[in-house]
Image 1 (tube, one colour):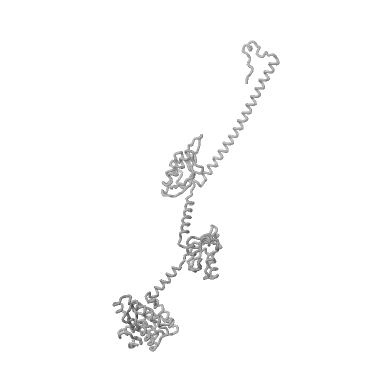
Image 2 (cartoon, helix red, strand yellow):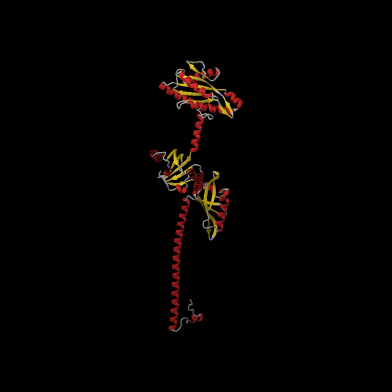
Length: 488
């Protein structure tokens, strides 16, 4: 703005404003107008500055409130928050860091010192990216941390690091560590469970609460023949064999819903139509409120097991060479016959048999010939008896007969004659005819004994008397003594 400036000489002569009246008025008006215009602009600038100042003050208040709110959030956060210098030295931390150590213990230490060796590269990478300002949008890496009380692995965290700026310069780093140990352990447990589910030798079937199949494992397919696609979506009842009736399954569901588990043996049917026995264990999977979400059924085909048990039971009770009952089963049968006889006063007779000439054949011709003789002798003895009778091999060349209902010397003698007659028939073996005989000792209940011990003793003594008489004969015990040997 240009103002009217009087000449100093004019001022001295008193002629400063001696302009023509009109010209002087115009100049003064212009100067005043410019004064007013400048004043208006100054006022506008002041008003704008005051408004801007108020905005800045409000922003400062908002920033302070936000900072306080952020501080409160960090202090109360479950995640661990660290502030470190650009080298990783811990400057401050929130209370959640106590999961590692006390804040006093952490302050001044390098965050890398709390990272296990297998994670140190990830830690250095996070710090370097934050310091350089080149961190990725989601630069989050997994770290394994230790605790002050335990130098071994104790915590897995998902970590991020952010630069803290001051006047446009990075002067610190802010770290956020989220504990994901439980998540990783859960993932591991899930992986293990999946591996077990897929590799288990037992069939596994998961159903909803109504029995609709949700999942099956490979062993299910191997056992039943049904693929996963064929089974999933169907009710588990489609496997039923019909062996168990509706009453069985009513009790089955009652127990399962009441206790949350059931275990037992049942028969199911394979895709081929074959029935098979299975050992089944079912458990309910429930939520925190106890509501059943699914049932997990684990089963195995126990056909082989049952066959093995049957085989073991056979071996425990039968002679493997002759197929006759062994000593153990003979003793059980004798107890049973004796108990029945005492209740009904029904007699029976024990007949001990020792093969004649067996030792000579076994010694001269070998065990194969001896086994052939024992097998044929056992077959012939079994062919003589009724279903109610028992013939057993006690061991070696000794056999014994329990003849139910047999009593009286004449009847006993008739059976002994038939027995010896059957034994003396030649046995063909490898082109040779083998000849044997038998020495028989007989004891009748209750005439010769009223218990197992006395009957066995009397029959054994009678058998040795027959053997001493030259063989191919029988003795019948008589009141503790033996009748003379009789030869057919």
